[in-house]
Length: 378
Image 1 (cartoon, rainbow, N blue to C red):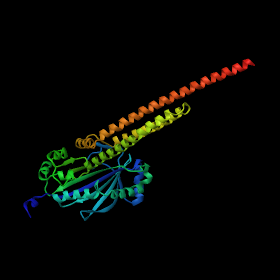
Image 2 (tube, one colour; image 1 turned 135 degrees about the vertical axis):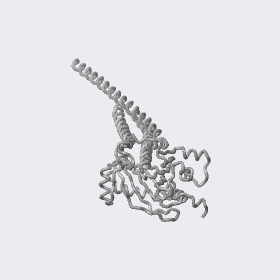
Image 3 (cartoon, rainbow, N blue to C red; image 1 turned 90 degrees about the vertical axis):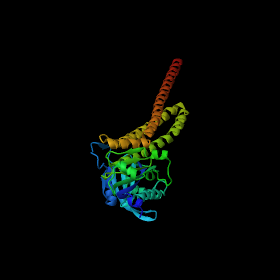
Image 4 (cartoon, helix red, strand yellow; image 1 turned 45 degrees about the horizontal axis):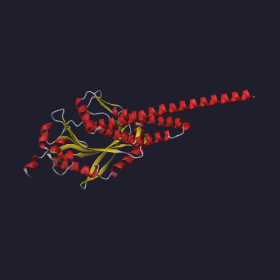
């Protein structure tokens, strides 16, 4: 055995976690999910909370519900490998499925190879039937808890490489010197340019001397000897917020052209029916604005990090990296357009009603005059 192989780090304890998040409903009754899951599988469920952070430092708007599914066997490079599966339900209509493969006593090079194998087997470019089979099982078991289920589910994916224990204790700085994190973070087999490497390693965080988190758009590396899962949970919430804002951005994109067509159609109606059409369209737009506003507020308040500065930095960086604030601003702009249109329609409906009222008064006056003339002639 050569010296390099002898000096290679060994991952004594860690995991590779593939996340796939789906928008499955307008909202989810989490209390009912707990009851339905217990009846469906006799399995346990629990309300989500962060393991290593005081509750006063981090607050969920509504704590999600986590349930356990049956373990699966994955073929990773033709090697049968056990994978544990959990699902976490968020009240704003998102379910996050996590497939976890344990990494035990793996040489670092084998750990990197396992990350790539998981990505090939169940990553974004793999056969989607794997994830949809799990999703169908979840939907079937929790259907009564889903309010206005989505006909089609948009999705997000994320990959986590977690290391809890190495063959020798290392500081974050020493770990970065000993191993190359770029292959894990990029998923590429070929060497990257210096600028690409710097871009991948830009979002790097440490709180203690011996912990390290590196974020990218679609994956993250987490070195956490204390073994808590708070960073992974925060990244999941950020992905859930991204997914839901994507859903509403696409919903409003589809709504705006149809709204303009309906406005023109209402304006083309005769005065007798125009007011009614304007009022009906205004009510529809008001309902849409109210629903989207309610849900986006739930999404925005999904997690409030107050006193934990480290988690707050990671959470804010993840949101910025995923472009959640930009998507939120785009949704707000489109809602503003719809609100303005609603106001204009309401004013136009009121104006048309006033015109009809004036016309009715004129007609009544004419009728009175005619009746008076007829009476006078007699």
